[in-house]
Length: 165
Image 1 (cartoon, rainbow, N blue to C red):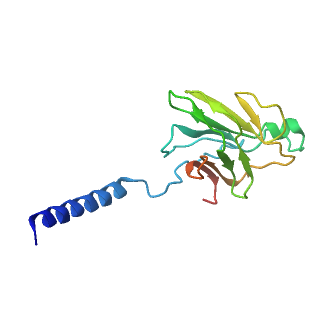
Image 2: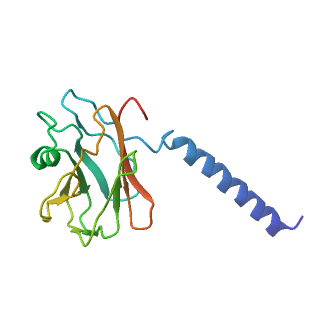
Image 3: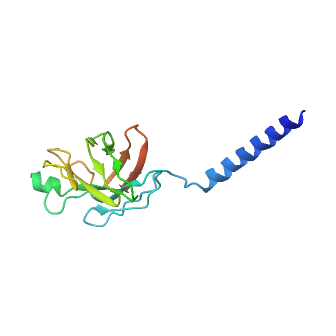
């Protein structure tokens, strides 16, 4: 075996070993956002994200009686936060639940260290609040999962609550 071939084989073995070590250091599940089911349906969790944009707090159980009014629907929301210094263009990003309900961000640039709140009901979008336009509640009170994906469909962050993980 030639010396260069031996060097390549040793380098490949070292890279493979490094990958195993890196994989072992990663969390067992990419779904590490454990929402805390406080009695009033409000959660937040840890995040493992390649992006500076992460899911923030989630109000998955609208306070008060579920009367399907627009006010009640808009008291159910998910926060999306840019933890970085640079603005991020969220155009084409999506926020979805386990049931397949999906909100697509349209023409929204999220400044650094800023948060936008995605409400379930109807309203007029601003820099801080956007509306899914739903006539029904989206986020499950007992168990659900919020998933944020970038404009290429890659999962950026997730957050789960309840018993179904």
